[in-house]
Structures are given as C-alpha cells and as structure tokens.
Length: 280
Ligand SMILES: Nc1ncnc2c1ncn2[C@@H]1O[C@H](COP(=O)(O)OP(=O)(O)OP(=O)(O)O)[C@@H](O)[C@H]1O
Ligand SMILES: Cc1ncsc1CCO
Ligand SMILES: [Mg+2]
View 1 (tube, rainbow, N blue to C red):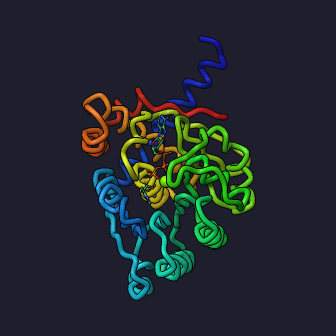
View 2: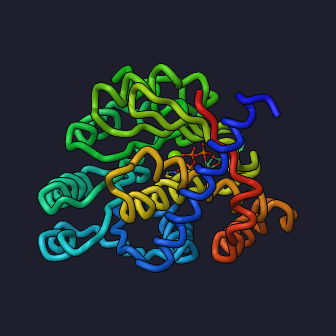
C-alpha cells in the first residue's frame, strides 16, 4: 500500500475507534440532556437520545431552569418553532449552563427565514455555545448575519457551499460549527473534517437534523474537552444508523423506525467497517 493510503487507513481506524469509545461511554454514563426544542422534533429527539443511551429531558419552562439546569450534563437549544415567549428561557438556560460549566449546543433552525429568528439566533450565538449545528442555508445566514435563501427549515444549499461560512462563524463565535448534508462538515475555524456517512432519505424524515444536534450534545457531554471530535463522531454514528436503517426501510416512515433500532443495536464491527471521516 502507498504510504499516504496507509496513513489514511490509520486515520480512519482511529476515528472509528474514537467514535465507538464515545458511544460506549455514552451507553455507560447515560448523560442527562436537557432539550429546549421545537414541537415537531420532541419525539424523535427524545427517542434518538434514548436509543443512543442518553437520558433526555424536554424541560423548557423558565421557572425550572435555576433548579434543573445545573444538574444536567449538556443542553440542546433549538429554535424551530420559536415565539417570543420561548426566548427568555433559552437565554436563561444558556447562562445557567455556562455558569455550571455544562456544554450547550445550538440548532439555529431556519435562521435566515425572518428578522426575528435571525436576531434571536445571533443573540444565542453570543451566549457561547460549544457547538452550532445547522444545514447549509442556516450556517450561511448566521455567518453573514443576513436573511437568505432558505426554503423554511429546509436547506437550499449543499453543505459544501457553506464551508467558508462555517469557518468564519467558528472563528467569530469560538464554537465548533457543523453543517449537515451529503457530507457533514465540522470545523473549529482552522481544521475542517468531513463526515461522509448517511443517506439522502434522512431529509424526508422531519427533525433528523434536530435529532442529530441533540446526539451531538450527548457526545459532547461525555467528552467536553474534544468537542470537534465528539461532534464528528455523533454525526458519523447517526449517519451509520441511517445507512443500516435504510437497508431495512421501505420509505421515510419505516426509515424513522429502523434508524432508531439501528442506533440502539449499533456494534463495534459496523462502526469500524462503515465510518468514513476525512480531512477537508
Ligand atoms: N444528501 C444527503 N446524503 C446523506 N445524508 C444526508 C443528506 N442530507 C442530509 N443528510 C443527513 O441527514 C441528517 C439531517 O440533516 P439535514 O441537513 O437534513 O438537517 P436539517 O435540514 O436541519 O433537518 P431538520 O430541520 O428536518 O431537522 C444529517 O444526519 C445529515 O448528515
Ligand atoms: C418542520 C419544522 N418546522 C419548524 S421546526 C420543524 C422541524 C424540522 O426542523
Ligand atoms: Mg434543522
């Protein structure tokens, strides 16, 4: 084998081993993940976290945050069905998580769809999330701080179109930025890696993006000091579960079911043989 191919294979093996180690840790430790999320995603997000081994809590009332948020292991904030009444709790939870030293992850759903949403997302970015995960259009809108081409919550961009936007947002915010798509891009503003697992049918199951953001929160909860690696691992594991689910599915509805079953049953052999991460 060429030396460069040998290096790539070693890289691949070490990414796969790391992803498996983090999933095993997650299953052992069962981190408590607080989710302040949209009404559409609540069920799939909670079931994704449970099947991966984490413990989800969809607790979003501002009255509960001072008591509850210091006890969590990570927080996921998703603005999907945002209204003004939800924003104070999102702010408060981010501040309490920061104070308690708990990582929090932002999903800026449809950030470029309205001024209200964009302003709210930019304010939340200013509250220092560890990771921001969006689709191409969302990351471009946030990075440029401008309303932009987005088909509501769906992307009108390929993830690769958002590479420079992701780097620039990572540099300006200090967060790890992940862009989902055919290739998921993960960057700290300097290093960029691509996670290649997944199937396009995932776009036909609503809230799979929201669910993978929560899974990122669970992976970061078990390895907070390596948020880039944890994020790439979560996206890879979710993508592999999607591929294995698709082998059994007949369409979006059965993919949803088989995705969750595959995540629950995922073993080391499947992670080692399927995981594909590369430097971009
Ligand atoms: N073309 C594709 N091929 C393979 N996997 C894909 C493709 N597009 C998206 N995915 C995967 O689907 C999942 C959801 O990503 P997507 O970009 O659709 O998120 P999203 O737009 O935020 O979704 P939602 O708002 O419905 O939660 C991710 O795991 C991503 O890797
Ligand atoms: C469809 C939809 N609308 C607001 S949030 C959401 C879930 C996918 O982002
Ligand atoms: Mg989304």
